[in-house]
Length: 159
Image: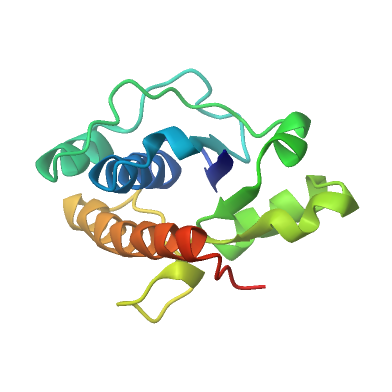
């Protein structure tokens, strides 16, 4: 079983969206039993809260339900417990790298490295913007999580 953790700052916009998108790809591929998927934040600002209402609405319009998720902060056990820990942007990747024990650093990366339709390495934070930002996040994350699944199934993970 492969364990994947998606990480952003507060775990209420981007990382729960990534979790929901990846789970949707797994269900469509009938592979959900082969993976454990979760999301977390590098900060504790929103621990216990549901995803941002705008993120939930944007995801729901695409058939993805993230309403039952609850924000949590990355904990030390995550570095050992997950096989792959993917940040939404470089700042959160740096935060993860500062916390990560040296033997687990190879598990860290950026989600957008798996994108095939977009040439950018970060998922922008939509929190302070409008609805269009949440739609953009979904476009990016749906593409990147589809590429992630292809890479995991084929064994072609970037090194």
